[in-house]
Amino acid sequence: MRFEGKVAIITGAAGGIGSAAAALFAKDGCRVAALDINEPALEALAEKTDGLPGVVTPVLTDAFDPDDVTRSVAAVLGWTGKVDILVNCVGGSTIIPNTGRPVEELSLEEWKKLLDFNLDSTFLFCKEVLPQMKSQGFGKIVNMSSRAATGLGGSPAAYAAAKAGIIAMTTRIANEAGPYGVNVNAVAPDTTLTDRILNELWLAKSEEDKQAYLNSVALRRMGQPEDQAKVIAFLASEDADYISGQTIHVNGGM
Image 1 (cartoon, helix red, strand yellow):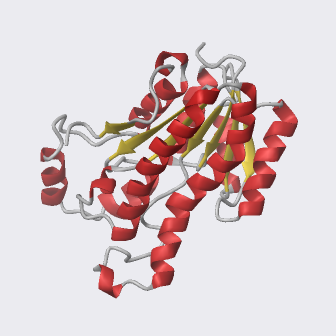
Image 2 (cartoon, helix red, strand yellow):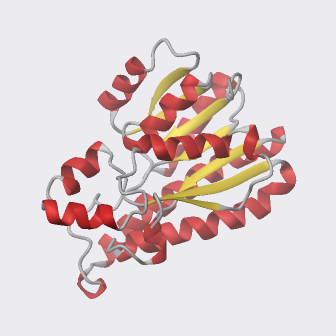
């Protein structure tokens, strides 16, 4: 098992890509601290993964609150004495309704909130785990960017800016932490058929629009959370020991 004896913190673990990653890591023997603000969904994840070789422990966490981030990481270190892997899955473009409007119509508050949710939360968790990873001489960090980082695809400008920032931050931290044995990479999905995307976006599309999107994907299908989770797990494993500072695009060929 790839992650036997390893400890991972996975943020945004209550649903979508984070949940799929937590389940896959536990299947491979990992001890997973599943962080999210959605307590019922965390409990459901723990129940779903019960009986796997690894264990998933829910940790209720507000990724917007620096003190809560510090508390949660300290709690995990108190239980386990180490953090081998950090997967930053907190994020999304729909936390604020209608932020896909032209930039001149956005308030500074809306802009900052999307950046906070996507970019700042990633920074906070990296900041908290890096001292431990450096001191133990080992660590794997996987951040979530997006195809939106290119400015393509119609995502809100603030979301695109945040995801582009994650790519730059990933490269910079990889350079800083590499001498200490810490690998830092990012995964950049396009639209992934999580429950939230299904209910909020996909089902609202006409059949014509759905087919047009599928035609834009070389593999002619929607990405699933498990597609992203497999790449996250690869980057967190020993198979990726010589990969750092990279962003892997997982979008079916777009």
